[in-house]
Image (tube, rainbow, N blue to C red; front, top):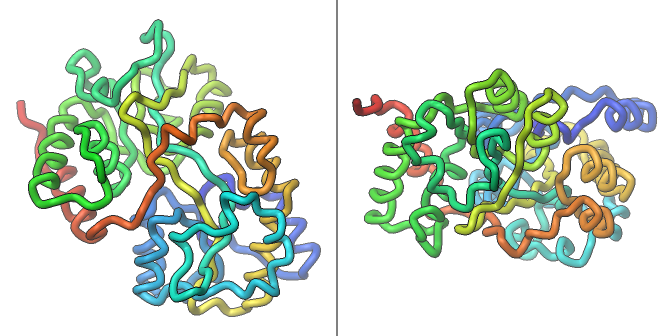
Amino acid sequence: MLTWEGYADDQWVKAFEAQTGASVSVSYTGSVDEIFAKMTASEGADFDVIAIETSSYKRLTQEKLIQPLDSSKLPNAKNLAGAFKNVSAIVFDGKTYAAPFAWGSIPLIYNADTFNTPPVSWEVLWDEKYKGRVIVMDDANNAIVTAALTLGIRDPFNLTDEQFDQVKKKLLAQKANVASYYAGFDDGVSIFAQGGIDLMMSMGEPQAPMLKKQGANVGLVIPKEGAIGWIDCWAISAKARDLDLAHAWINAMLDPAVGTYISTKTGYGNTTNQAVNIDAGLTYADKLIFLQAPEDFAKRIEVWNEIKATPVQP
């Protein structure tokens, strides 16, 4: 399977192997771009099951990299909370292609030793005061959407040519402040925890507790412009070798006990136990702009690569 860190913990893998007699090989990814690159390279044949967020499913189905789920093989789908039973972004031609698993945001994490009160705007990432003290996730779509929100663009998923130019200029201006573009939860946490970093465009809620465990004094905030919200789902590759096993894994992940563990351990919202979401303080869903399929994913990757390749102006 190809998934994010924290979505295939040893205890679940070992329990699944004991139950099914299967051997599970887990590959972790650091970005949506990497998932597509790995899936496209083998037309999906290298993986049976993947986890990815909702905005990617239109492209996954268009490129025939995943296949519809068989609901008869997912009895635990009955555990899904109402908000996750009919997610339009994963339904195509009347067929459901994925099972919602976890949700959360792309928030701003800040050094609480530097900030007496939380930053209120994403614009802080452009403040010259923090030059060289900012890290940003290396993810084309998330970087572009967040910059568009900062600019006040109302629909960050359907940018005009003029808006693309505005976003590109904005992100190029940010480069002067960026110490590093990071890939993966651990990478971002490691860079921040080493010191000298005050602000991070985070990959998600788990990075705050991860940093605190390493002794960093950090806070997490959803800026006034809002932040990206996401729903990660499990899907089956178009070239999965064993459909029964693939469905069995997804079914196991829809057990409320797994949802409870996800929220307790990572701070993510889960799709099967809403009481736990409230207890975990995940009450800011109304401030999130949930991911949608962008107007041209390939163009976003091209623009992002151009931004990263452009030297910082003195």
